[in-house]
Image: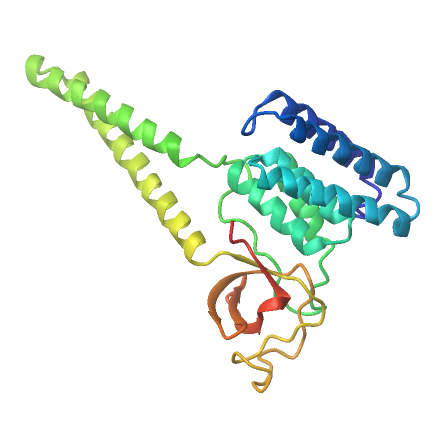
Length: 277
């Protein structure tokens, strides 16, 4: 999808951001915050007005990005902010940072349908190698109909089920009625399942912290076998901006990344964006 065609829809999301930021304090809604929001709105609207001429519109979206990043530095941290930051980056022709912003928003709100759709649309703009699956994102293991359950919910459910299960088991020992025994076993089993899910969430978070998202930021980057230009390319085809992977190692100005298909290689550090937030 051409991001410029969807500019009006992205402006609507931006308007919601302004309203949401104004109504919810982020370190206090100061006069400086309101001034940033006003400048942000003006730049974004001007960019949309000039969207038929990309060269004239792009600087305004760059300014909108700068103001959004300033809001982030001042404490704004929510899915709507990152959705609009991704939209602004995309309209400013910065696809890698748009992808990174959408991912950050989904980390805060994994079930956000709009963010998932925007991420899928942005991925369609990435130029992948014409043959093979090198660098192409893999489908999610979780079915689309299954919502992501936050770790806090799993912890709460595990505690509630454990308490109810203990009460039911105690009641069974007092009256020896089968229904209390079955109820206790059911809730204790549910508690164990929730606790297992929580352990999986913790492992995923540790994995994300240890191996953050990496997005290729330049076109025509050859993945090499070692951390230097003297090493031969691992693959004959180059990667272009927007290809996603995970950081494995960082050494002497180079990073080793693992692509979605398990392919591993080295790229210059300045050619890769890392999700270090």
